[in-house]
Image (cartoon, rainbow, N blue to C red; front, top):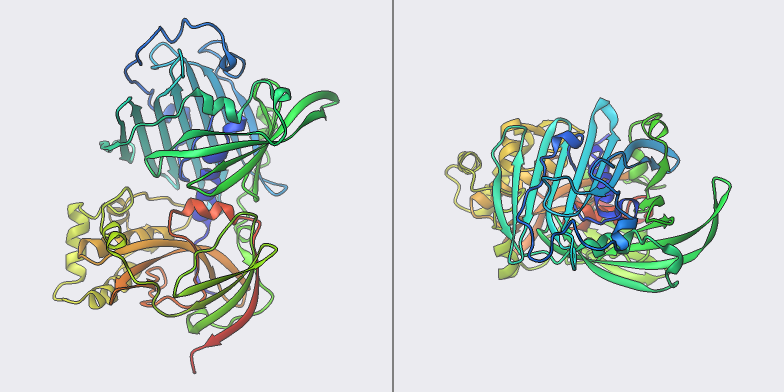
Length: 521
């Protein structure tokens, strides 16, 4: 059976879904990528200058007072079990409280999550946002910390009116690296949209769109919240008024549903189609968790394909979740058939032509591809010494990465320089390191996230990451995890915008094999 690494993808996507969707559960919203810190003590207190205007702690009571706690000491919060279907895989805690004396605002939201993954590893996330008081209640500071398999990735943001400064550090004692980003327009109204204090007053079908900070894009996303149903429901033998809400993030392309009680408390919170938060007592929430069902995050097929590396053309019929699209290009052509179905033909062949803007973006240094780091640059030059063509460099880098990294699942190493230092990882780490090395020697490269056939033993497609490079003016798919200089036709691309988009496909995608062509023996 083909080796593959989907455990981190499942954990990362689940964690990202929490951060992106748990707004209704906690009285605020965020759009972070998967992977984050272990416990509240690991997150530094956010400090930033107070906004202009009245003392944020002396305003008249408003809607936020009915969602957030009455005092800084109100830190107990609410607990949730994290479920993959009916199987508990972790727990989450949501705290909506008044700011403490050293925090730059009036309201604070904390969301933490712990997910068990196979092999005894764990994934933990915590996100904190601080909102000012006064008119508007703008976002003033925030923290997003991730720990997966012992690797810690921490970000702290200070939100000013003209810019956002994000400092990111990897490892417990690593110095932070600052990045200047656009200002955020997010306010406490984002929290109130996703956790309305009086759900009974909502109008069915009514929508509101608010800005929501996106940690990965380092800019605001647009969050649209729609009231699907409003009415009475029996909860623990008591009739209460609840609202079912759908929250949709424009950039991420993800939607989640929640059932919200009076006071903005979420009874349940969907994390995409595969995961759910359920309100529970603390002891219940923390007990009975099992490791993520990794097979459950893949997609089974009835027909065997034979050795994946030999597949040169593959035709699939997909049943897609509502509102979800699969990218189409010269390598992977998609035809929409209606009723949520699409026909996809994948070829082991070059993709679209690469434009100037796309090439420039595929040479840039970013949060994962920090190719200007001296160690990354030196490794890239060493691996491609004496080679002059892009094709030769790619042919050298693909096996170099495959040999250089030890396979380890259940880990999240967030940058290429750190991946190189640690020397291990899953398909995401292989891809991010390869992309950085390619860019360091002038070859445009970008990561791709999707599904790949794992072999006839399991007969399923599993979540995976690989890369595309520009060769002869076109994108060419390569797989540095499996040492494929040209990726086989079982690589079904779902996203080039970040692995968080995989959340839209979890648990709600069906695949039928229509036709398969293989290399001649």
